[in-house]
Length: 395
Ligand SMILES: [Mg+2]
Image (cartoon, rainbow, N blue to C red; front, side):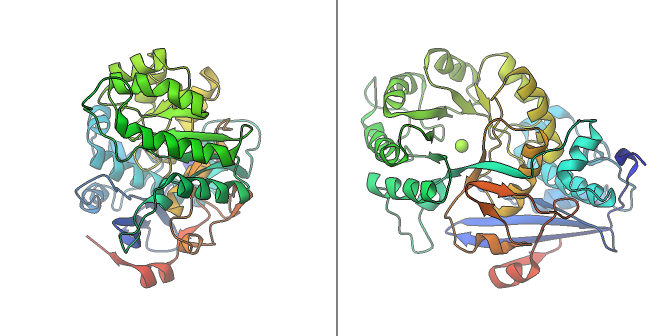
């Protein structure tokens, strides 16, 4: 039977969250058929004011008791348009989480790991790698902990980068400009950026010339300051220039920055759907697009984006993944399925019990994510971890 003939009838919906540190909570949904099949999705939404779970519950009501045979049934049964999904990020997050859960369940019904299900669904020949190269994003380890303590000195950035290199990663990423914010009082390189450059130089000194340091600017600049910063970052050895301005709100400004900057420009972590990511590449806005499995439409959409864009622009897709282990698991399946050329993001050293959230434990070896053997995602959020560190609820 072709994998596209598999089906799944959801009848149950449950949510769970895990307290991570400070304001961070990892939030998950679980879609069940009342017997043995459960699909999972992560709907963590650190930048959103409103909780996503009521929106998930509303959309899931339209799926209840229906025979689903594709993750996109979430969209069609709710009558949603691409325009709605491109412009409403809470909706996009809810849809992405549900599409992930449905794909997880359908892959289980097909008795295939998600990576193989994705390829079988789209006649993709050959076998995908089981180990997915990661890069170590040290940002989240440099945010305040539950006691409000944080050391953001250049030495502290260097120490975290060193720790990642010792663990086997060959690429790290930092966000050194979080204290800066456009508009700036003077033209040229803003003074607020100097401290960030010191952090980049300190981290790059321990990473060395043969390994890469990516720099995320969290959209804190404008055209003038971003153009002044680009040559400084190049000189400091940065490997890419991520979102000096917001890709989706300031597309034309970012195109000008990319046109003049001599290092690759990356972004679009909040984008939804293959049409949008393709347009950003066709219109020369970015060198690297960063679909996030929690916002972009889920693992099937991420796979399609990666497959299509890497075929047209080699080394143009690196999935954004700063959240919990469930979204990293889904991202690793999608990334392996499209035969990635660039590493996948992993937020390291946020909490030391992170691997225990999943059953089986999240496995990262020498800078690589090791995909589990089970069907579907091959992992689930452990109810014991939820009982110890969070809560579960139904809407
Ligand atoms: Mg980013």
